[in-house]
Image (cartoon, rainbow, N blue to C red; front, side, top):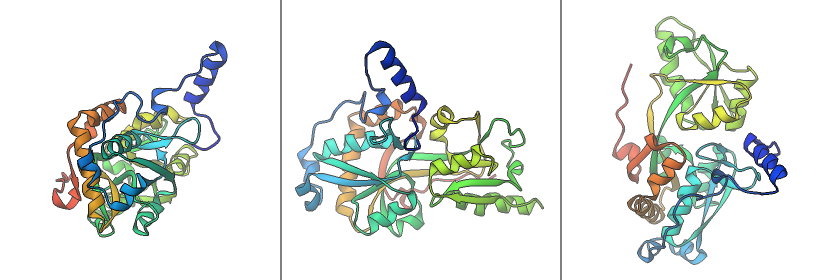
Length: 309
């Protein structure tokens, strides 16, 4: 959501309030709404690094423009989404609270590397290159899709239909590698024109490029489908593509901070064991992306087999 511009949801809430005099908050606009609170576990709390135990909180950095992972609520201040619900549940089990700041995606990993933040999370896909810089605590799966304007009938599930077109992707996302390493080679091997990549600093800018006609399609997580359709100023259609792989998504901490990584994993496993993880995934309608066995650096420890077209 763009700061200062009310969402359709906010407009509807305001209209209802004016008519009835009753104010209320939509469940999605409140972190943890509809999710049972959890009791702290002292043994898990004791696993945390001393600095975090003493502070009683963990600092998190995100890019809150990527629903349903996380985004700004109607108040333009509260960061909500399935990951904030997870942060709340995990920190409850660890007996601490959290603070969160939103910056551009490209600054998330550097912010953790430099020690400004304890953890970064924004549906960050786990891969071997990123593991050279940070440690992942993987909590979900992710896969992508082609998002196009409904009026564009030339783009289909046939990979050839993307050749010669222009795509928008967010800076720092793995989608740029999919285009350069998979889609364009496919096109050129068949004597077709390559796919041109335009990179933008935020998810909002990526979608604006599509709505304004500067690009033909965008690549985005399939989990964001319903939120994007709800907020789009023009009808959107989603097309699956055989070159879009399946990833692990996770939270990241400083590469050598295994004490924190292990504590977060233990908290995440406890959230799983109490059934709260499944409730969060159900709440955000992404149960198909649920990761039943979370772990550390799974992209290298338990790599996913990708089918080749």
